[in-house]
Image 1 (tube, rainbow, N blue to C red):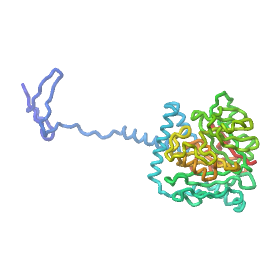
Image 2: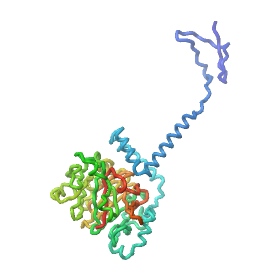
Image 3: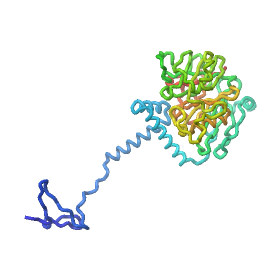
Length: 421
């Protein structure tokens, strides 16, 4: 017997008015006539499980982001873990993508007002500066420089001020701020000038990096400032890239950890404390006179001339791990024309080109890039308590460091430290 079912406007079925046909695969119901609709299942509300999962993932991401920005060791740990899981090349691509997002956020949220040096200097260093005799500081500081881009400059850009240090009778360490990018008021280059007639610079290998081609006992690489130099210790700053990011050479304490690369920019010192920055091919003839040397990518600036890869504003693929146009934190070392002043720069939100030009504006004629990314660039000065204990103070707010930086625990990466002569 055939049955007929009609669909009502509400979607209800009348069993007495519908026709069913049997097929080998079971019961088949014909489609409703045009203009009518079949009944729909009730809409399901999002499950609590989905909401809780989303909230947990958001919280985890936010917590991770905050940790990267506040804990000095967290960023390197995450990066190294990812490298072992997905490879260095993919981690570099991820770092560049994150940096690009951060720069776009900065551009969208920036007020266009540049920060002054006083805004980012710790109170302890500001108060110490006030105690220095103004005439004494003026006598020994480098000549002031004009702000390269007045539209994005802050008050005091290019003006050198003395940094109070724990040893020495006359100022030997100075600082200034330069805004080196006309498109970004938030791009900042903090430059420290070291009077090499009063200060000595030393290189120290990290306990792990740069990894050596020869086996070296861990005891020979403690990764801290030697006890013998702590009495005159003034400051310290980060070193160069990991070995896997370019295989840039290093020699310290008579031990070559990685062999030199001929075209790599090389920072080197002789026994009397004279510093040089030049491609290794120019330093090699006098290699036996060097007590330490550390290599970086090609010199950003050599005798006042930009590296060919940095002469275009659209520079890409310069350096070892990060594109030249990637907007990130960077660090660099440079020398004055007569070699009497060492300039050390740490930056926020800069391209390689902006970094190089900013260092040149500060007074450097030859410049080597050091480590990059958020966690690594730093410049610290040391304070001494009444009990004689040393502790580090970040010279710029926001750059990551630990109170016992390069003192109480082994640094896995190489670094430089500064002592009074």
